[in-house]
Amino acid sequence: MPEAVAGSGPILPPSVPRRRSLGRRLIGSAVLRAMGWRITGAFPDLRKFVVIVAPHTSNWDFIVGFAAYLAIELDASWLGKHTIFRWPFGALFRYFGGIPVVRSQAANVVDLHVREFNAREHLVFVIAPEGTRKRIPEWKSGFYRIAVGAGVAIVPVALDFGQRLIRILPPFTPTSDYEADLGQLKANFTRDMARRPEGF
Image (cartoon, rainbow, N blue to C red):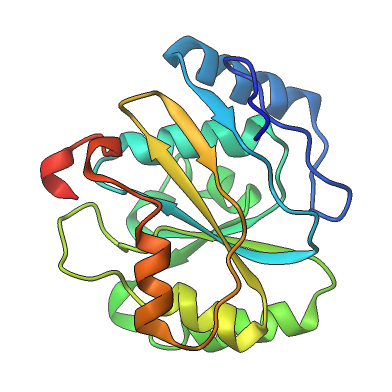
């Protein structure tokens, strides 16, 4: 599996949606380099897929993930709690693919994203399967239902704080056996990767 040098990102395959920008690449790479993070692995050469990022236990997860998103010039959509979209960062987050969600009104998010996948030629959707920084007994199933409904692969990405590595792992094709598939997906993530292991 290819490994990027500190602060840089892998080259995206031609089919993956990309927003070319020297500025965003330099900013993202500089942030990763300053924090001592590297990116390993590569995204599959696919036009559409769902990315799940875990473990999610602190606000630092967003900072590291967003820096990597900029560094590799990925063009993707992602969900965030509506409160982070307030001034002064709201417009910026929306520009970079952010979609604000009010959790109490999020019942139709799965259907909306399935329709978007069906309507678009290219789409990458990024989500934290835990859905919150707090420790929870089970992941939210929305990411899985979106992937199954849209007929797309799931690409796991691990934020390994212990090694300061962003690990892009091989794509997973869901089988509609949720329990079995969930077990395989969760096996990619371990407690010692988390920024706050007690929250995993």
